[in-house]
Image (cartoon, rainbow over all chains, first blue to last red; front, side, top):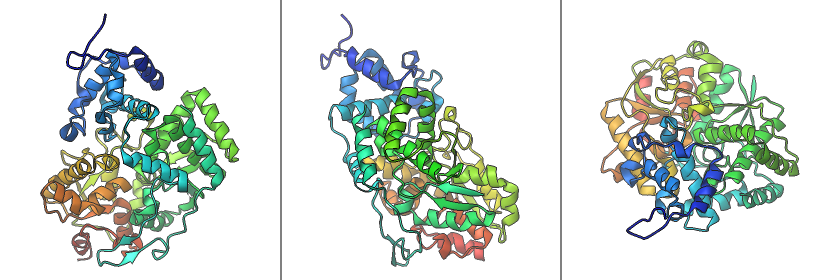
Amino acid sequence: MGLTDLTSMAKPNLESREKILRKLGGRELVNCFQCIKCTSGCTALKLLELKPHEIIKLVNTGFVDELASSDIIWTCVTCLKCLQRCPQRASPYHVIMALRNLAVEREAKVPEGYLKAVSRILEIGLAEGVQDVVTRKMEILNRESLKLPKITYPKESFQAAFMKAMEER
Amino acid sequence: MKVAVFWGCRILTSQYAYEMSVRETFPRFKVELADLSEANCCGDPVKSMNDFAANYLAARVVALANNTGLSDLLVPCNRCHFVISEAKSFMAKNEKTSKKIVEILKEEGLDYNPSIKIWHTIDFLHDFVGLKHVKKAVQKPLKGLKLATHVGCQIVRYSELGRVDDAENPRKLDELVRAVGAESVDYAEKLDCCGANLMLSHVDSALSLAGTKLSIVHGYGVDGLVVSCPDCGLMFDYKQKDAGATVGAKLGFPVVYYTQLLGLALGVEQEKLGLHLNQSPVDKLLSKVSA
């Protein structure tokens, strides 16, 4: 018994749903009454058709596996308006973040930008590498020529600690 | 007063104008800045991949601030400010996870201290320094400048966490703009996002969000847009040409950091504020000020 998506014949996976609820740690997802305040203010709706209220509904009905492997969860701009305006404390933002975490656990396709950021953090501690900049008069400058202090990077002990943290779920 | 500063990644690696203008302006209010050494990313991109590791990174920043012996930490980046604030709230509510994070920090000899206070440049200037002192310090009022403000997303939302300003009607940045003698206009698209976060996954959409907002604000006939976040600075200033191209608009719209504006009003030389680094045509705005 239960729901079936008639186009794909997919069935809800309640175990995956439990996983998301656990990650959300008490956020009141089931209280969502589909008022659509989140979607009507969503930054990504205009361009990328992200509909936060649909995501909440899909998680509530157990279609979590489909979401975790979909690109749609990676279109959130993290402007936090949905969470701010939700009258039911359901927080689509946190649901999307939990789905992204699950996608990573399951080794689903993750946008390259995120993978690069993490590997740079492992390498130098920062998510971005230091860059030269060009002035409007086409002069190339860097931290040194701008008389900005040298960056001090974390030592190897940080890498070990960060690796350890990445193994936790 | 002495405060610890966590610059994050983007300011330290490319948005130098923000860093320079903070370093120039804050000491003029008798605020001494102490950089965190061997600092790491706040954890923002990691939040999407592993929430635990992201909270660890943010907690490490707080622990580094604790190392300096100071009780206040200035975080000029909106995104870092949010990630660290949320991690602090998470650590306070989740004892078990918090313990695990504290243990990992101990391996590096670091101590997490939940009482470190987190500031952004906007609330630090508005609430701690105070509008009265900002006004008093102004040497060259920026009279005649009509500006729009873009406060960004993550320092105003979500309110439950305790943010820098009101979520739906932020006023502090406008008040700070008025404090230096310029005019700040109200406009409907004020809360529209710059799109920076999508640069990690959907570059064209990110640029199109920035381009759309820029062309609308440009159309209001203001002299420039004031930002206070390195992500917004990147999108509206550094990437302005690309953003314009994405939405089919030819933009030539000055975008400055608030601290650059403040520095001008305090009489600081333009180059010391990194005003030669802005990629948008800020000369238009500067000639209005010096005229």
